[in-house]
Image (cartoon, rainbow, N blue to C red):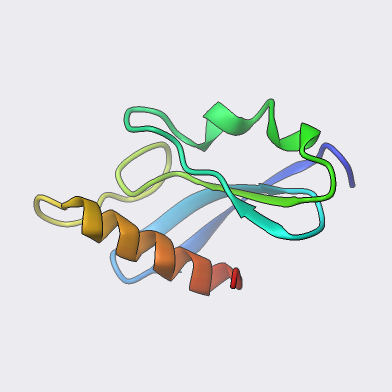
Length: 90
């Protein structure tokens, strides 16, 4: 299904993390800059043929729930690692 972007939510310890996924093939993880969301990759994802593209909304951005307290970069890294486990990305 070339060009089709599906959306979903992964259940993490802190809450739900929204993501977009498209394509088939080796997994590639697309991480947006702050103040954006996975929507930033909506036009490029369908063009990355031969790859399965995963674009999560980082915690607190887009439709993802925020991390508690005053999160640091390592907290975001742990949330993305947990997301990868939840959706089956090696």
